[in-house]
Image (tube, rainbow, N blue to C red; front, side, top):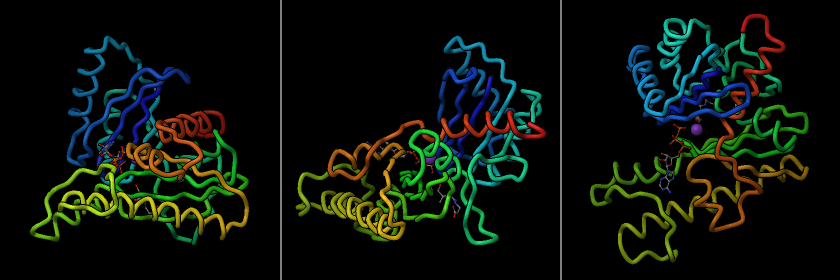
Length: 260
Ligand SMILES: Nc1ncnc2c1ncn2[C@@H]1O[C@H](COP(=O)(O)OP(=O)(O)OP(=O)(O)O)[C@@H](O)[C@H]1O
Ligand SMILES: CC(C)(CO)[C@@H](O)C(=O)NCCC(=O)O
Ligand SMILES: [K+]
């Protein structure tokens, strides 16, 4: 069975697959100090609670936090007796090419989203991921990652207001009824919510104009549905885009790699 790990700056998601069959998914806060032993106890407890007998033979990791990878490698080695594939490392092959400035390290989550989007929808895509940052990945006709956009994440924007201004409280995102807020919380929600609707629309329009081909816009991440409800921003929403991509990259390396 495959253990796929998607480690973002805020949350880390672990998923187990038996071939292409989804078995389980668990989420934890990302913490680079967590040791291999801690991961294992946590995973093992959850598996037992759900009566899952998982024989992990393979592991693949996408991590936007480089120092988390060390302990995940130890986890793979010590408890599953395997070497993990780490997206972005030279030994991890990708089924698509990456056309960016020389020396640029593209976030592995963006590469995985590119692979996954291309597999499901074909080329000429914009993948919008609402994570810690909001990223736009531009996928060419042939599936290549050709660049994109990085904007501050929705929760990060709200948190930045709270951190920087003494009178602004901590606020969770929600869709405001009106654009004109009549209290502080409503004003902040309006600024971030409608600001984001505008940001997504403007950036996608400009990407499409720059590429000069028809493109589909695919969204992923927990907050995507909230934005889709309010405006026609996306052609499709995928809640397991990243996990699907990890599975495809793992399979591709099994078939084409030298050491995986
Ligand atoms: N309706 C909602 N209202 C407020 N927050 C939400 C809602 N739905 C999901 N979220 C939050 O949105 C965030 C986005 O989730 P996602 O897993 O896509 O990214 P993340 O974990 O924040 O970022 P990263 O992948 O970079 O670690 C999560 O923190 C999740 O708790
Ligand atoms: C932009 C984030 C933080 C989004 O998770 C991640 O993809 C990242 O750290 N990227 C590195 C820079 C880049 O993708 O160009
Ligand atoms: K993510």
